Length: 254
Image (cartoon, rainbow, N blue to C red; front, side, top):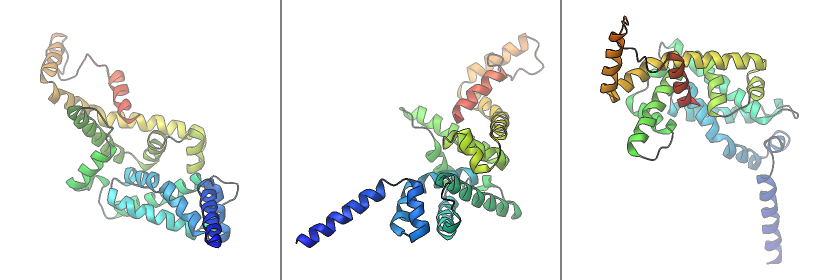
């Protein structure tokens, strides 16, 4: 009994030490000892962030599961190439993004689009990415906005999509994104600004149309105001300048 008690205590101490390890310490054990317990700990910590990243980059939640598994397999296969002074998260994000880029190239070669997902896929992604809101109406509105942003992101070139996903969904700092993508911080900043500008241009007419359908009286009033001011097109909502609407649209993402 005393032996079993000591064994149980050693096991508890081992697990406690494993859980308290940093990612880099766990990866060192994987690299030098092929420690499967340490590897399982890394998978548990990172599988959800990786799945989110792959889903937002490819627009396919099912394929994201496969890409996530491929990323962890790549981590184990390439464990000897991990630099001891490197940040594990930087290395992992880079591996996952490269797999996403490869998948997007395969999609393009087949002449497909990330937007070609079926309706069930669209609904799943819509529910997954939508912000939680307190009332059914507000929840539905949040889901619709989340779906619009998701689809708009998929229309951006991957160099803008990647920085927006890393910055505004995974909350990486500019310095961290620069390390992942191996580009200067200034380039990260400019890509974020350009990506948001492009996203706003894509979303603006969709949000205007959605608001018009939700509040037809407001749309009619705006149209009448446009006619009274001699506007060539009465459909523009002059009560919401483009710059302000752009900020409102960006809040959906941010």
